Image (cartoon, rainbow over all chains, first blue to last red; front, top):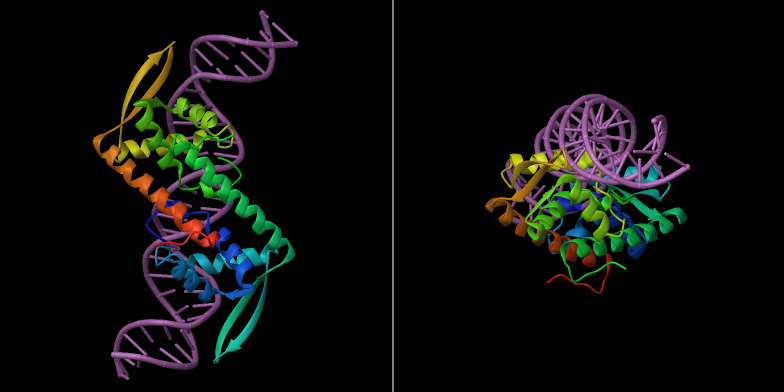
Length: 112
Length: 112
DNA sequence: CAAATATACATAATTTTCTTATGCATGTAA
DNA sequence: TTACATGCATAAGAAAATTATGTATATTTG
């Protein structure tokens, strides 16, 4: 997931946000979409992705639907109502994180 | 360190950056400075800070100098030459992380 | 004056989140 | 037929944090 440690903790936010745009996605699709959107900067590993998806499902933020396509299994995930709410929270947290870090790192950005 | 998980992995960057501005700082001073700069948004816990400082010292990025002030011990940390170089890397990584996340989360920001 | 709070360091146990490695299975390209 | 792509999964270990302590001195407050 990139050599930078900064991505730790942001996988959930990424997954949830992508699902607000695509309605439903399956795991492998998420890895490809992230690779594409970030021009290869960020590669989601399976060892990180699948446990994260299972956790989001267990927390009731995602619903899963299994489908067989081309004789291969796919698990489609979509946001629940709570998942949609939580996505909004996560995106606010991300905006807040960015603002805070810029205040720390760049004297030009002052927090209110 | 704030309820948001996004700060995971950014402590080292924060410490190094603050030291480029203040020449030398001690642990407690860092916690207060961060609290002040972020208007209380971010509170560095001791359990995170001290091990991080020790690690940076062990890696040769920080030098330490112990002083007794008002009958209390202070450990002043300052950047080594390598520490200064590594700080530049960390700040680049932060800028890159922010750009990548905005590309993922905000369709308006496209990566080159 | 006693108690709480602030200053200043430290570490140990646990949790969270990730990496790395591995496993299984099918389909397609070289 | 061998490698690579698609698609899921988990287990062992590492890294970085949280939470809970512990020690000690100085200052503020009721």
